[in-house]
Each structure stands twice: as C-alpha cells, then as structure tokens.
Length: 305
Image (cartoon, rainbow, N blue to C red):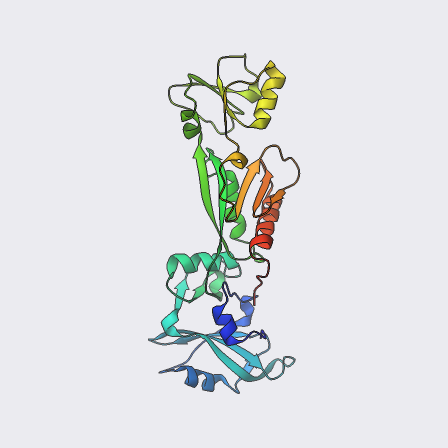
C-alpha cells in the first residue's frame, strides 16, 4: 500500500490505482460506520496484491478502503491498517461495459459525466473489471483544428489515444475548430484555391480549385497556410490574396494545455511551453508524444498510487 496517508490521498486530485488487480471487491452487510468497517477488516487475511477494497453495502452504497498487510511477501497476510478513502455518501458506483478501467482518462471521463458531484467514482467496465478515481480533475486539452474532414483528424487521434493510454494523467480533449466556410467569410471571393481536394471542401456560391492539381492560374483567394503560399509562389511566381487556415496561427490562450498541428513541421514535434505542435498528418506515435509532453509540463508529479 502507498505510504501516503488517508488524509493526503483524500485531498489529492486524480487518485487512481496503478493496477486494477490491486482493487478487491466484496460485499458486507450493514449497517456500517467508519469504525465498524475498519474493525471488520483489521486482522483479516488479505491477498498479496490487494491495496484497495471496494465494499458494497447492500441497500446503502459503496465504500473504498485502503489496506496495508503485515507482511508483503506471503500470498495472504493479515491487514494491519485499514483506512476509509470514501464512504457511501460521497461515492458513486457506475457500470459502463465499454470502458477500459485500466485507463485513467476513461475513469475521469466517466466520473465527470456520470457522477460529477461524487468525490469518488467506482467504475465497473469492460471484462467486468472494477477500478476507481478519487477527486477527478482531468487535464483539459484544447485541440485546435480546421474542418472538414469530419471527424477532425487530430482531435480523433487524441480521443482514440486517451481511450487506451494507461500511463498518462487523466485527460479530456476539447475540439476548437474553424470551418472553411468561416475562413471564406473573412475574404469573400468568387473562387477559392485550397491546398488539396482531400477533404472535399465546397463553398456555396464559389468555384473551387486545388493547389496540388496545379491548375491554370486564376483570380482566386487561397485558403491555406505558409507552405501553401510557398508552393503557390513556386508554381506561379506570386502570392495571391489569402486567409490562413493554420491552427498554429490561431489566437491561443496559453493559460491551458493545447495541441495544434502545422505543415511546416515535418518530422518532429515542437514543444512551446504549455503548447505542443505536431506535424500536419502526424502519426499516432507523434500525437502520443505530444500528449506526454503536455502531461510533463502541466502535471509533472502525477502518478497512479
């Protein structure tokens, strides 16, 4: 069991067991009090991997206990310390069969959406495995994008990674997106040039051309980025009227963690304090690296207990 005291654990944010195999689940008939539930477990044999016990009190609710054993070596050893981390009045039990409870971000997402008022949330998830989070306060990551495509690719990559990343501080992602229609309104035109046809963008009332097809020069407005301007100048010898679509150039509130992409980055990520920039078309590994950097900057001391 962790050497952290009960009071310290109860005040920490995002308390998550390091492995759900260390969380035992049992039922105890009540009525129970903090004193009686501690008395019930003191001296009982506890399995060597058990560090926490989720106790269901029928008709009442759920308790979460932290336990220490007399000797960590044998298969079973008597409990010499039992601490109440959460009692039924502050604990919720949520069943979400599709949630992998080994992933801290999954636990946090369930906690803030299904039981936001609870201090502790126990989640019974995929494989019927049970885990919990205490004082859920996930790191809110802003992902700046341009759409279409739908879903926005970088945001989708982040969400997919947070579904499986067991080593990261609990995080939730929020999409900050601008559409091509919104960009076009900044510079009304009868013809727009886009970097490529890939997203199948259409703007009502305007003709569309695509830079990667190297069309005949026309009187268009470019909805693109610095690299698009460089390519346009290479093709045609000039830079047309343009509106930047680059997420990196959008106004950014640097008071919180954010993840953006930029096509001027080709093979590595850029760490700009609390903001991380990944290449346009970033791999999942690069996005995961970006999330690790954000965690390292914003929550450097977090670790499962």
